[in-house]
Length: 386
Image (cartoon, rainbow, N blue to C red; front, side, top):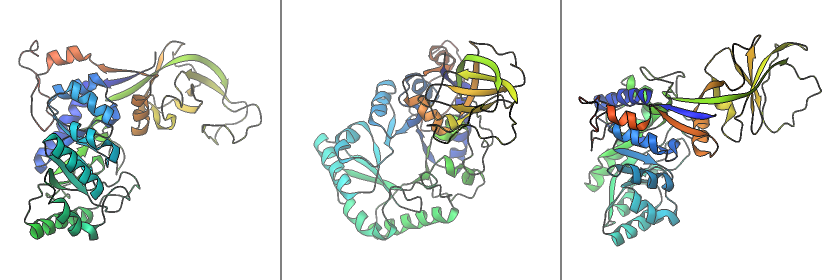
């Protein structure tokens, strides 16, 4: 059996530590759930841990969250399509925006439904993703502030997400100055600067991030614990919350160097090694997970002696070593995925996904803490209480 295991104890530790960083900074935050692709048991576990602010970029996922976690603050984390405006207003409290035409449509739909929709106006600061140019701020805000069913929650930015631009303190100081300028110009409060992501956490931990940056949208650090700037894991976070178990379908001693002439026209990249000689042999295991299931280049065997030799659409070859290491057909090899591989595993339809412990057992042993913004994992005084 091939399956993704999500360790709720590790997930809870990461949530608790990141929540502590947020409280110390005086910030609110939203758990980015898009990598879960609406996985019901993990969403229920997040609810049990106290998560009440979730953000996603897929309306299908937000519908799933609405069914599973009825009392939550919802964020739509990509610029809405014009054709999606009605669903965005119905399903979410806040959306990220950079186009007047879209905000006009959000306003009209909110007016029709008799509600007010929150928006964060995104500003382009160098990652070349969504965002208005700073020179357009005054005219843009002058118009948006006059819309009757739009509440401007603040300004925001995406850094370190598309172009790989490393977030800098100067960029965040710019955002703080832009907010001051807008509040003085229009005498209208802008409570949020939503510019924190997993990539920004190293600046937060080191105390370099301005206090004005007071809202974070965090995903990868929760699920994988990664330090996106320095590499490795962030202090105190666990990197074992997500594991792929792949079943061995064949294990044999074979040559480690192809016996025939090779070309570069294979559809998928294979291992390149200059330190192997013709005739060198070793044990190779074939596991029944391939590029159809995930981003194989984003998998790392947990056993560091193993290495991925290559993959096709439906199998991956793993070099085990000079002996079989006690492995046999039917056993599993465990891998840690990076974010891209995890996303593919959760969005595909061929891999089973499970939480550990089972969600029913988890909910028995942890108290619900409704309506908290910060995720909090607290053991229940009565283990039988739900």
